[in-house]
Amino acid sequence: MSTPREIYADHAATTAAAAEVTAAMAPYMGAAFGNPSSVHRRGEAAREAIENGRAQVATLIGATPEEIVFTATGSEANSLAILGSVGGAMGAAAPAARPAAVPPRRRIVVSAIEHLSVLETAHAMGDAGVEVTVVPVGSGGVLDEARVGRALGPDVALVSVMLVNNEIGTLQPVAGIARLAKQAGALMHCDAVQAVGKIPVDVGALGVDLLTLAGHKFHGPLGAAALYVRRRVRLAPQIHGGHQERSRRAGTENLPAIVGLGVAAARAARVLDGQPPRTIASLGDRLLDGLLARVAGAHLNGDRERRVPGLVNVRFDGVDGEAVLHELDLAGITVSTGSACSAATPGPSHVLLALGLRPEDAHASVRFSLGEDNVDIDVDRIITTTAAVVERLRALGGRVPHAAERVAGAGA
Image (cartoon, rainbow, N blue to C red; front, side, top):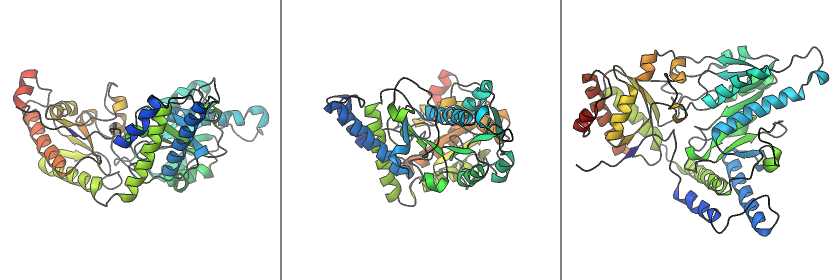
């Protein structure tokens, strides 16, 4: 029996680097190598390539090149945003320089569905006397601006709210929350890793002070990310030992990866400008409608309207989501049960629990995330195969099949 063509539907986890990205990176892994901090010609050429990539990333999100700090990952950028800005704010408001009537800013406000790199970093600051306020979301996975507003106060240093949730795809009202944060005198950070390159993102329109992006989510290389830092925002470095990135992140820059990130950013800008109205949006709707129609006991996790196109998180009553994932994988369809960063974490997804789901319902959920390389026939096959897999698993009591049973049902 021939192996079916793989359908990749896990673009929220990572995307393949585009051909023009890898082509642009190749010279800098060979003859064009150089240390951007060196003062000779090779170093100057490397530095010029870095600055070109910085300009390309800035253009994609409506920033200036000086406001872009390169990091290795989105998680690092999130950590730098939280630790660096809150540490900077606390240092700027040292007791000796602060009037007695002004309380110290030692509180962070986050949503309950933030990426773990935000939640765990915020909670890790407890040893430094920082308090964390976690704002719940509604059953659709969308924050209420007024509820965030009620959580703010003169002691808040930072508000961190993601633009697009990485598990359920819901869009958050970041611009409105940023206005409230500004009124309260707090900085606003936005984890936009799942948004940049997929939907238009403009830091000015959002009104944020800090914003995180990662290249591998929009056909750039792994190991290349960036943090937007608005001018005049004080950011305490978390890595010391050099003056790279304007003394905000020490260490020799990853020249090939940054070149690739820049090309991916320029490519994403072109794709967003020229993308026809259908594409991923219509494919996502087709997938969701098909799964809900073909699979009894299928339910969408998250809001139907306020979400990015192409990210569909569905729970299937009576089956284990991981069992569905493995069976689809055998059938040549790659999906996930949630965030790749949380795949090794025991227990149900904190995002799905925040929606009010029971643990067993969270465990019954599967995330399908489409990309620009998916087409109509991919969606049709996903629907048909998923329906057959769920029916078969229910007949087996929802459990993961034994090896012999998998072989017997691999053609589903």
